[in-house]
Amino acid sequence: VFNSGNCNDWFEGIEGEESMRLGKSDIETKPIGLGCWAIGGQFRDMGAAAGWGDVEDSVSRKALNTGLEMGVQLLDTANIYGAGHSEKLIGQVMKGKRDKVIVATKFGILCDEGKKCTTGHISDRDDIRKSCDESLRRLGTDYIDIFHFHLGDFQPDDAVWVRDALEDLVKEGKIRYYGWSTQDTERARIFAEGEHCISMEFAENVMEDNPEMRFFCSESKLCAICRTPLAMGLLTGKYNSGSVFGQGDLRGKDAPPWMNYYINGKPNEVFLKKLEAIREILTSEGRTLAQGCIAWIWGMDSNCMPIPGFKNEKQVVENLSALEYGPLKEKEVIQIRNILEKEEN
Image (tube, rainbow, N blue to C red; front, side, top):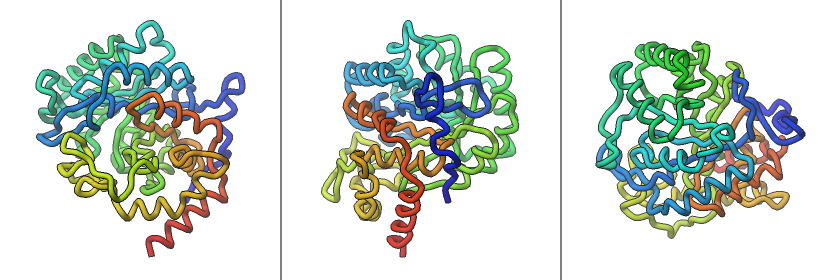
């Protein structure tokens, strides 16, 4: 169920600070990053709202700068977040400190910056190269640290040419490493055969564990980058059965088909009930609920890097402060598993 190994492995980093190595690379960083989807602002994905409500650039930049000051390095984004706006914000805050930032961005979905919408999917190597060049321009840098393939259900038979195109970009110095944002081990295995593949990104949180991907990453010496560690805000405790999200929010009534944290613009009642059942364990030792959910991921697998999203400085500080407590203990992870299994029955 869990693959904690020595949960303190990543506490034995440089000069005693918390750190972990990203897969087979030489990159050593804190075992937590920042998910930068929300700060991209409003955009539309195939006609549906794909932003997280209103955001202010000044607030977003302050939050990013605070995260960097607290020692976080990995900033996870994508070309489509805000139709390029998230990448632009990251480019602005990392001026003069590029060597202190690990930029992980994504490609695969095409977008129109002016119209703030997605326009389709890549179809050949030229699309990949163009997407890379556009991301480099918005980020204001000449290399991307990790270039993740964003199409999680892309046909496995076609994944080899995508992987080979990425190896070419590595040779040219445009990217350092790459990975795939996918829930599927069959697809992940194809990319893992590439020399410079170092990570897989997939949804992982206390409501939705993906042990197959976790174990695959550990066995393949790939970093498991865990998106939605707080289930798009559901696991922070801020929302209840009476919470309602507007039309301009990804979590609203017009949510995409894959959205299961929120149903009809309201938090998933089943998840709320489960969260309440494990709240006491998650908030042990003085943790906030969000910090407990992040600690659960570390407790499940020391190879996992959660990348909680944020919309302001307060959220960044709270999430990164989870490092002060470290992972949940093995017995706590088991207790949570047992409680959730009972809730299922």
